[in-house]
Image (cartoon, rainbow, N blue to C red; front, side, top):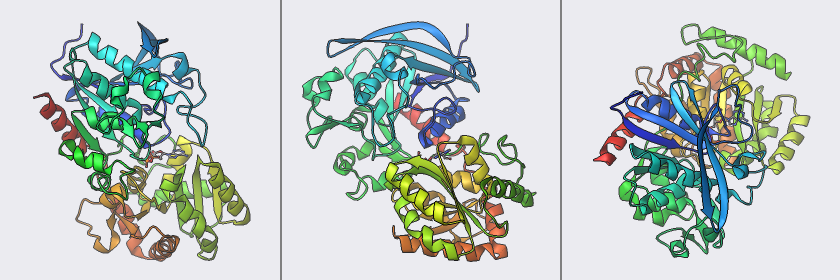
Length: 479
Ligand code: ADP
């Protein structure tokens, strides 16, 4: 039997790499527990989506099943598990979670029963805590897990402390009032101090109101979400709870995102043999049909939504035709953006477009690119810019949230500093983005470009410092 003096932590998220990933949350839910595993006995729990590869990860049933009653309806759920990269993973299987094609719903919409699906997930988490009282900490992430904070707080038999991390305030889990009953919660939670949100309910509020501690993914974003501009209607509520709110910058998994060893690359490289990065560019240009190894290659990887600044990008694409550059875009999202991008790319030979979610291709693009475009309207943390810097691809960012915190202005470039540098712009306008692209194209012609690219590759974007802050929080909360 395994004995351990380490504190037990249960980390819950709606997606976790490599099992299920649609964005940065999955990266964090994989890399942060890994970074904390030396100090804590940490397990991770996620929904068992249909597409998860059972055989590849040796996922087995754990002979634990639950009948969860919500609104006089019984939901059957069972627990599966596996061990991967030294971490124990639990998967919650239930027909409403597992027998669907997407995690959250098809593009442009969420499943109608998402509140029930994710509350079921939360209720199974709470059952687990009741069965094993040894868990000191339950770390929850985003609205899909927020109800667990409320359930734990209201169940006096559970001593576990809860942390709720906001990865993106714009996705709150907003449902109509009658949903409260459907997820088995009393109508007394329909008030301003609990879940009520302008006549509807916001499940995000359950995490904010009931968790013992709240974090978000950068200090800048922690400040921003308390303002009307970035508060998504919750700025006042967050100011009310600010005594338990702090920003901790995300890190990236230094083992997964490593140009020295990345299995997806055609050529490994480091800052010492920086020239070899070019082999990846060559290979990418060949496969994408773009021309001109000497032209700077700008890449964009991400969800096609307003948040990611895709409108600005679309607005400038035509004008980049005269700049002697190439642009490669990988992503998926709202249909309207697909259509606009497809139209422009079909007319412009310097643009290559790939629709879809492709982990392998994204790594190849980080390695091939000279610059990363990240014109986000808001950005809680952002991982792309950190990954890009590790791969020597210089980021071009709108200075907001985590982008402002992790990409320092090139004008302040100091080779002795440990910070990453890039090109930034302050106004969320197409003209500002275009100007930044022009500045970058000029920088590419100078020896300064190589210095910055190599410098960024040697910076530490891993969890080494931020994981310590989470560790402190776990210890402080328990006292
Ligand atoms: P988000 O707001 O989408 O979570 P982040 O910057 O925090 O954005 O993290 C995005 C993560 O998802 C990065 O690992 C990025 O490389 C990856 N990613 C985004 N879109 C795609 C895609 N279409 N194909 C492959 N990887 C993607």
